[in-house]
Amino acid sequence: MVTNEQIEHLKVLFAENKAREQKALKIMEDPSMRVSHVLSLKGVNTIFFLNKAFVQGDIQESKLYLYRIAMVNAYYHEQINGEIFNALDTFTYPLLSDSQVAIDRYNTYQRTEYPDSFSTYFGKAIQSVLSDDTDGLRGNIEGLREWSVDWAQAYQSVSTVFEGFLSKNKILIEQGLKGIIESQDHQGRPQLIKNFIHFEATALAKLAWRKGLEVYTDSELIPQQLLPVNSRTSYEYSDFPGGI
Image (tube, rainbow, N blue to C red; front, side, top):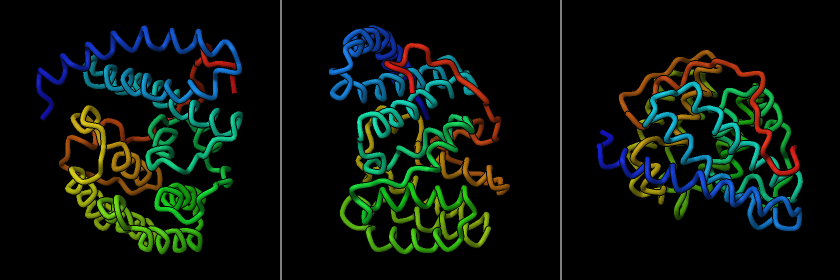
């Protein structure tokens, strides 16, 4: 249950990050500064999303900021040659944003410096589900199982979710989502985000809805309002440095 104290703290962070965003955008008017500063916009827009969704209570409009995060990561990958698969949450944002353009864009990504890593298999498993690639999904599930070590042990229920996609078993997906949430205290997630949402679990639940498997959980960390697919054809992000 989100507390009033947590809401008030989020309001303070929102005000601080409005100024932080403008400072970052000003710095990045110089193209040479974008490499070191562009990813700061991910954190800024995370705060904006949380504020819009959980302070203002506007889930649908909050998806704009998830789209912005997706585009920040896309810019980092496409324009700066950054690694797109090295963070577990990267592929969650286009899904949660409901931007078909962003989803299609992410579904083309293949380049990675770390082909054998849990986060890479996670992103590629999402791609496999989106593409109805059952052979690819099987291979990525095997990779997830093999690399469920160290920090990824706390995410081993992800494999159960993808097994559910493979067999089109809604109950198995729900069991996997429950396992992910139950292990969140061992996942090293930022405390602020832990108070409000589990991005990976929510994105996997939304992916299930996208594939016609309307899963339900009793966890507040998987906001049910975010799960129905309400595709957005476009978002405005006119302040993004250099466009994409």
